[in-house]
Image (cartoon, rainbow, N blue to C red; front, side):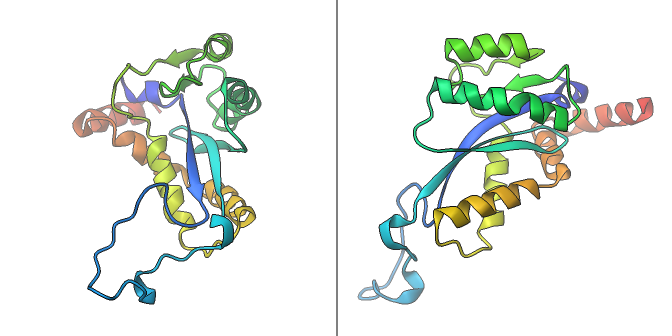
Length: 200
């Protein structure tokens, strides 16, 4: 699709952040009898420090609202978050009333009540193909946010939430625009961008 099509797409997704460590196993290469050396130990806090799920959205303009998820998110909670944040975010990005909505194929996202709400409140819903690679550019925004919060020493869930919120709001619009650009063939994007500039 041409650049103008993607300029009004609102990408939505969620991600998990830990106070310490990662969600999976870590592999360490070490010399014999060096397992207790400080340089190869992972820092930790009592009771693991906790984690935080965040749901957010983005467009080529920048990031929209973010929302902290406490507990397990089901289709009802997901729908409530959309109701509170989707239209607000589209308004913030100046893509109302004709914004398009993109989400992945998570069962909560595709629940009947969520699809029905989107049908009546979004100009267009872009359906992700089943079994397709996840091409949602917001996946890279989560990595970008991870890199931003790594520069801080965070020791509690409250500190994690505070930094997630402040660093999310500091993500520049050009970061989002470049992520979307990376999904389009380079020569096609350059051609469309020149045409778009001439129209402006």
